[in-house]
Image (tube, rainbow, N blue to C red; front, side, top):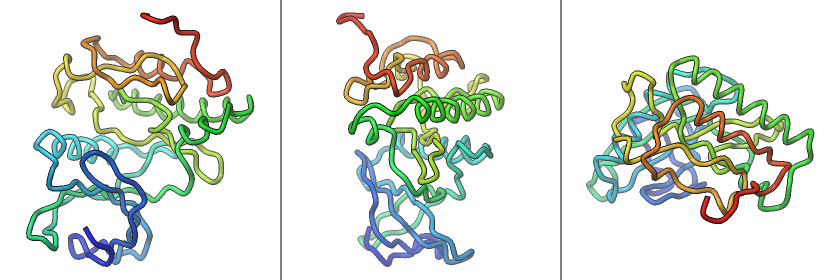
Length: 218
């Protein structure tokens, strides 16, 4: 993708602001309503599983309206300058930084940590009320806005309690163990069953407490 490209006849790419294993995140201008947005764009290396995850994130997060959950505006596909087709997800542009970056600089103060935890718990309560389990709560998936509010992002591996949004198998994903330490956060990979309690456990350790008292081998 190149700066200046227009996706779907509507979203003009401005500059890349992040990258992952299968794509980039761009700052973009929504020409229809004249606002800045963030757009996740999948690269040509993405497979059906990544596309399905994108579609699921659009369906799940797009149906949630909460001040501590990132707003998803649109989902679509568009041709690229090299003749391929890209899949993209349009979200609100969050001004701030991930919690993981804040924790790399040190522990949060107790008042700030409690406020972040309260925002995340409130967001998860809304998701659970809609019958959804996030399953990947970790510092890099929590954005701290410029006003201090914490916002939960990345609903790509969310599981509906009725299974309607899940395209993974129980052996593929599970909730992470409770810890807030960014360098030790495990990727979801075991066969443990998931439920709303797994999200609650993920927020058990306050960012003010530092690494969890986890013993080796546990």
